Image 1 (cartoon, rainbow, N blue to C red):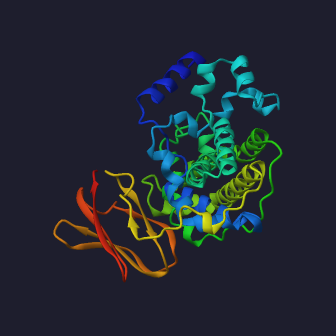
Image 2: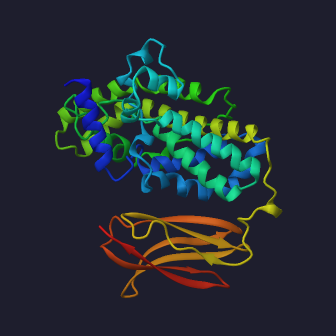
Image 3: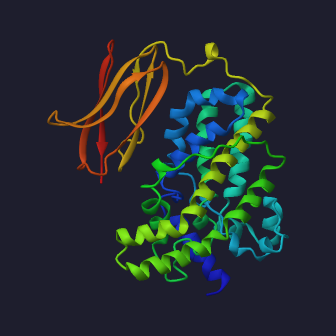
Length: 365
């Protein structure tokens, strides 16, 4: 198949897709955004106040209308990458190839640069509400570029007889092990050059592609139905590289947040000026809504209190308890996974000692 046909097929996928392509599963995205906070230097620990927000909104780019090519780069399309001559400047790469070719092979390195610049400007201007959203989205794209199968033309094993490996690797295999992982204990360092740093870690992660395909060949040979044995064998062979990629994503996200903050002049968010510190109880509409299968619920507490958040069906039967604990004042976010629930209308209820409110949401499968 010649390059023109490959490019045409890829552009057709971009045109007819929903607008974004998943990389790591959502659980891994949340993991990376959350634990990157712990790698920030002490003077940036005010990020910890936004832990819930940064975790919950790590998956927003997968639910938006942003182009799918923002989420990956087929680095093995470019022979120059492997001999160290690939231009890192977007315009220089377009001049070497052409615009459609570069777009068709993904642009995540330059998206990271763009989002970092936006984060710097928002921090410098004091627009922290927008800054937290951009920081969460930036985490998504940094995580995407550490997923080995988002660095290759063979992203779903379609070229090597490993079809379907993308989802099997990024979500089904990883998710059961995430809660037991020990987050990396490293303090981030600022980057001198964003785009060079991105291409540097891409070079570190890309060789894992062949290891994933080889593990899939072996595991599917033992369990061709992709049952529990298959995933046990996959994890046994890929745990070290997968943990390495996740840890690298955590540290590199902290580094890019740190870099943006320093470029903004190292502003410190004063709690007294924090617009996210509420003066009353608020329960936001869930997002997205309608949803399938996960949705986020954000709420605001003006003081420390016991909080209960539960999900009910239209018959008034409780189907899930999401929160039942004492929480501090501030903005909080919780996610409901309706994978096991039927399509239809549901109600979510926030109750504290001072406040009770219920809102409606719609699950569509």
